[in-house]
Amino acid sequence: AKPAGLSLDALLETIYDVLEKKTMSDEVTRKDGVEPASLEQFVRTYFRGKLGLKKLAREKATGLFRRAAQLVGKSGRVRLFAIAVGLVSYEVDGVEAHYSPHLAHCLTALLGALHRDREGGLDSINVALGSYPEGAYLIPKTKIVHAIIGSKGLLDTTCVRELPETWRNPVLLQHLSPREMQDLLSDVDDLPETGVKGVDLDKVLWLLLDHHARATTKHEAWLKAAFLKFDDDAPGLQEIEFVRLCRWALGPSFDDLSSLDVHNLFRQIGDLADQAGTGGDDIDDAEGFPKAIIQLDCALARPRRCRIYRTMGEDEEWVTEEPSPTAPLTRAKIGQLRHERSKRRFLQKA
Image (cartoon, rainbow, N blue to C red; front, side, top):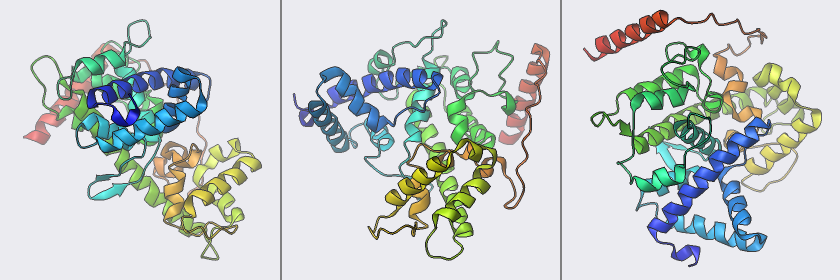
């Protein structure tokens, strides 16, 4: 059947398989030190691997996107997929969250952490999602918390919820600050639990979307302020001004970029931000500047690489600090920390 004629069940089956294959692919590419492709790009690669012919794969991918856009109102999971590939818009707290391919990276990272087996491989995400319809896929709350922070389980004394500096989920931590991660964990705590089975996975994924959207909107506002700060002879950010902006925003991470990297990034942002098609050598649109950046695979798109993540003052100098070694945690200390957190939550609810 043509993609345009896919039933809802067939569409969901394809989406589940895409998410499973992308989760596996992302893990391999990250181990090789390469940032994964966007979910939209991966869908095209997915069909190319299945069909072999580039033209046919492109038609299949286009048909899948078209069908997903048609059925967003029929399934929350289809809508989540459509948001992750930029097919439909999304609002959080009354503000439109612009498309960011990094949302899909966070979603697949969480799915991968939740479906990891004891040997470090992945259980079948496709089968799991296909076996449980929306609202019926229940996962223990503790397992979700461990997946978010990157812990291997209750006995993992090197990664503890109460100590953000021990967390090791590198994908989520690129975009959510420790404070934002704690807010996400608190919202997971508040989800209703069904007996001993756990909480609804779909609600967890939508919570992740909400928190990622808030963090992205906040980052966009900061990038816009940076544009205005360095656009000395407004209107229009020149390339030399952009270089100064990058050095100020990225600190030590700026040294990882060559002059050509910065030049190409400036051109990419300019092409995306120039919605009016005015051309020219400057980036003229202060609104389009941050919107363009969050669509790209670059350091400026990741709050953790920027001074905003560290709550640094606007003119504060970067200080390169060596990470201090973390003292090993005893089970008694971990128990004390968990007791203190439970006590705080009890007092807050009271």
